[in-house]
Length: 199
Figure (tube, rainbow, N blue to C red):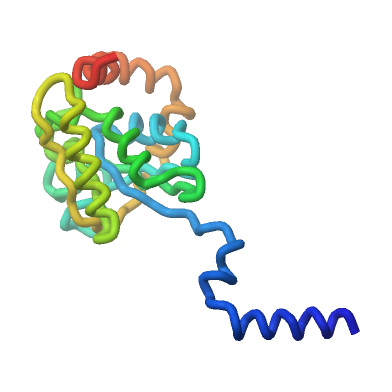
């Protein structure tokens, strides 16, 4: 009897209440954002530490070749950027705040590459859906005002297919810690970031 009463009440609720009210109690599905910022090993490692980020994947986007390889991208013939796809919990992390954190991880004044990595595939860029574009454009303008040196050159570009990188690139900072830290120090990434953003 009690079970029938619950079923009857639930049926009436489904008819009388709007779908958005019924769904309000459910957690929001994960959201994604795609960024380019030079070496994807560094971007993957740095963005993984942001609270609310669930997963960061290294890969390639923005080019004209299907299923590009690392060799294709670094040969500068595919048009792709080394990039990361960030999956995050929108209940814990706002896209605008994720953008704020992104800018501090790159030198957006350098459109010839990033740090010691030179060439078009290493340029900084934010890849957006139409819904993300207004937030990204506003964030870019605000970041430009905070720069200590240089002029904002990083672009906001339409999101294209994201191609995951080869397995040996994934979790590189964790799986090859000594090599990663030697590379990062030798590349001068952190020193340059202090010059660009201060601190």
